[in-house]
Length: 294
Image (cartoon, rainbow, N blue to C red; front, top):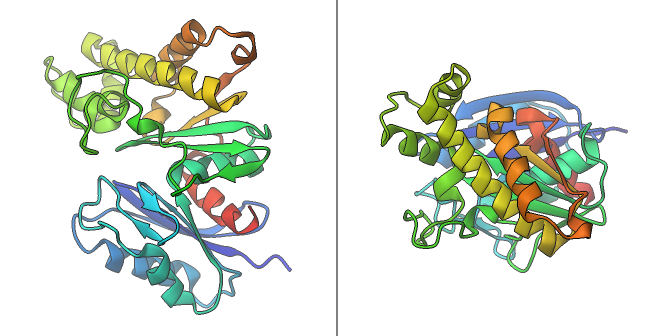
């Protein structure tokens, strides 16, 4: 019997919940903007709404990090009211004795693509989520690599500009301060661009705006340099790029591939490919559901 999994995807700008079957198909879903306050109230209402009276086999949770896997808590940099928030226990209280699995959003995206994505299939895959922040997750031997605390793969806090801009993590010059959507926009605005968000920045870039194009090129080159290091450390052959900013497609992909090719020169690195996510915005939900079988 193909009893679905209830999946939750918590991001800095959006929340999503869905029923996902064991083949990775989204049966029913809902999405809302992440509110400034009252995030748990919104999440719990979404989970109840999307489940309805349907039987489920458990819940899989994808959440932006950092997370503490042992404690089941989350402390997302972009959700300030959730510091050491007991998300796993709160969700478990909604479903009784059913299993609840938690992982960071990069791991869930990578697992979803590896198990169910048209571009996945490789047992050695690294997923990158470029959105409000920059997250990452590793699948090795076909299994997610969570690490000691659950934060393995958190590529957004690899330093790419020593002494660069302050990061929400407390450091400086992290990849997130160069490549995330809000920072792409801020960099462009400092140079005269007058739009509102990363989607508008992409529209301007495609229309030929020089500042907008430079913003994406700068972000993509930084991402490619970071991914060259990831590929060297983790020995992956496929890198999947997802998240809202990554939907800018070639604006970010082209410089990312350029920098990866420039810096990943050892023979075992040359086969590493960067491809866009095939599951789109459903990747985190599909991967969260797959946690129950990982």
